[in-house]
Each structure stands twice: as C-alpha cells, then as structure tokens.
Image 1: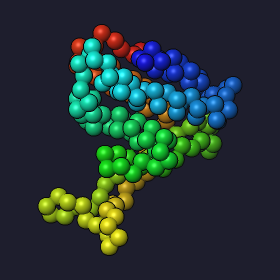
Image 2 (image 1 turned 90 degrees about the horizontal axis):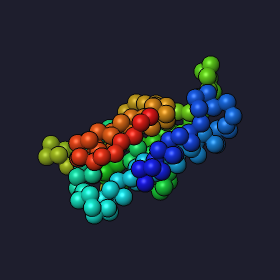
Image 3 (image 1 turned 135 degrees about the vertical axis):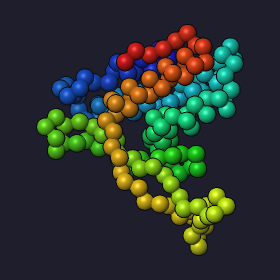
Length: 167
C-alpha cells in the first residue's frame, strides 16, 4: 500500500498542468488522498506491525494535515463529513482561474461549536449543535500532498518502521 501511495503521488500531473484537464488533475489528487489516508487501515490490519487503532487514530487527531486529509476523504466518500471526529468542513475543490497560473485549491473551514460552561455542546431547539463561524482557508492540493507524506514519514520514524516517502 505504501508503494501505491508513492505511485499515486507520481501520477499527479506536473505543476502548471500543461497536458491535463481539470478533471484529470482532480482525479489524480483525490485518488492520492484516498490511498494516502487509507494507508492507516493497512498499518492497523498488518498484525506483524503490532500497531493498534488507538495509536494511529491519535496520530491523525494530533496532526492538522492528517485531519484535513481525513475531512477530504470522508467528504468525498460520503458526500458530507458531519461526523463528530471530523475537524474541518470542506468548502470546495475549486480551480483558481483568476491567477496568472491557474491551479486547483481546496477550500476548508475549521469546525467549531459553541460550548456550555461544563464543556457540553450548546444545542438549538431542533437538537443540532450551534456552530461558530470561521474563515475559509485555502490550500493547494500539492502542498497538502507533500505535507501528508511528511506526516507519514514522521509517524514511520517515530514508530521504528523502516520505510519512508520522498516527495
């Protein structure tokens, strides 16, 4: 699976995307993100590694780039990523055509909710949590892809795995 992550990264079209349609570019990024995120499942299920779900979930929860990756993949797979453990709302996979070099970008917002004094969610009359507004941030998917590879490399090193990615 780690080798598939590398192959998928290499399939992402070159910057500037000279010979690729917008759809080809997004397809390549989304496939990379799906495989890079689900590497966690292979690590947990490979009993020779002795890695439990708690440890790998802690890794994801403590890394902002991995949490953004989780939100993208969950949003893509389920159409919405409204589960409590998701930290970001994806606002769009867009193409910035206004800049001199058009390129893709991911728009996202941090999910935050109004809390009571005892740390519980403040709810509306319909039982839904009251959301706090946040600014939409943007990231180029190549930048996120590189940061995801770096996060995995750090995880591998910290856990004594003899593997790593080169971006």
